Amino acid sequence: MKRRSFIGKVAASGAATAVLGQTATASPQEPRKPTTVTLLGTGTPAPSLKRAGSGYLVEVGDERIIMDHGPDAHHRMLQTGVKAVDISHAFFTHLHYDHCMDYARLVLQRWDQGADLIPDLLVYGPPPITRMTEQLFGTDGVYGPDIRARIEHQSSIDVFTARGGKAPRKRPAPRVQEIKPGDVIKGKDWSLKVGKATHVQPYLECLAFRLDAPDGSLCYTGDSGMSDEIVELARGCDVLIHMNHYFSGTAPSPAYRAACGNHKDNAQVAQRAGVKTLVLTHLLAQIDQPRLREQIVHEIQQVYSGKVVWGEDLMQLTFKGAVVANIESGY
Ligand SMILES: [Zn+2]
Image: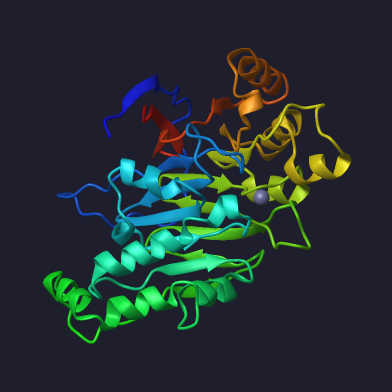
């Protein structure tokens, strides 16, 4: 999909900043690609053609990382030109369906097109993601009969062989690791710290992620209300991606506010954490209106001195020298 820059160059004041994480290993002949994050889905559980379910694609060096994969996030990923076989890691903040419904599509299309020629997908998420994976792809799982047919029927074996596979075909086998706050996962030149979100515990474990790459740092809070843990996890990040579900003062109950936060809460979190850019996501259609949108951003800016971005599907943020150097819209 062709992108157009609609915000243009973001001011890069203080661009000569500390390099985060480990040193990039790209050779002079092949400069390292800048780290990018693409918003695949900025919606909510409410049906929407404009905003897919929660999903983010982070590209660091030659590794492509998915954070959450809600309904239609996979479609958005295809729109960026990235396919399931290109993904190396998938992280899930929590197992609300609007954050994980396209997990099965990611695994099955990667398995089918990968023809046993690519490494197993590395999957990280809170319990019970191991059980969910088994219930989806195990012998007695939801897709068990389909998987068996594709492994054993001659027509499927022929397609598998034509793709370069060597029979007997293996079952899809994502390597799942259940994670908890405090865990650290390392990639080739990035590291991800797991934090605690405040959302719908104890019914679902809810996590937040901070990813540090050589050229930038990103905190994605999954779904969360305001909390000291989120502030600490996000401290000093270049980008904070935070749910901005509803308009402050319209929460139906204190429990709702505690689980989802609101735009004034988000302003405080961003200001206390000292992040450079706050990206608002998980936006209900009710607040995704021209007048309300400007009011929300304005009110956040009364508290928070950094940059505020109203997220949209396929928006891509590019890091350079530990600042967001460019923001492009996919539309
Ligand atoms: Zn949720």
